[in-house]
Structures are given as C-alpha cells and as structure tokens.
Length: 71
Image (cartoon, rainbow, N blue to C red; front, side, top):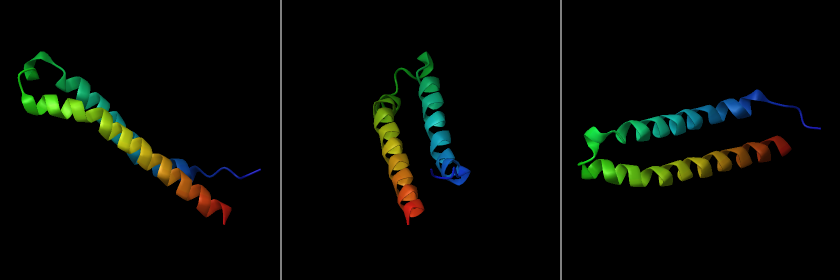
C-alpha cells in the first residue's frame, strides 16, 4: 500500500482556485448589465474550454507525480 502524501494534493490547489474563480466570474458576467457586450459573449463561450484545459493540466500533473512516486 502506498503512503499518502499531502504534497500531491497541495500542488493541485492553484488549479482548483483558478477553476473556482472562472466559475464565479462566469456567473458574475451573466448579469443583465453585460448582455450587450460581444467580448463578454466570447469569454463565456470560451469558459468551458478553459475549464477543460485546466482538467487536462491537472490530470497530466497527477500522472507525472504518480510516475515520480513509482521510481
């Protein structure tokens, strides 16, 4: 059985905070005040892709850390 290391989870915390900020920011931008802005429309359309990129980054980091632990 592998020993649990908190360092692995702590390395992924910045990615979590960025994802939370993107979600909160996306909900903030959905207010009626910003409805007529095309830039906001494009930013909201890109939001899922940014979150998906963060997920891929987190998975790659986790795989890299697991490989380092196996060595």
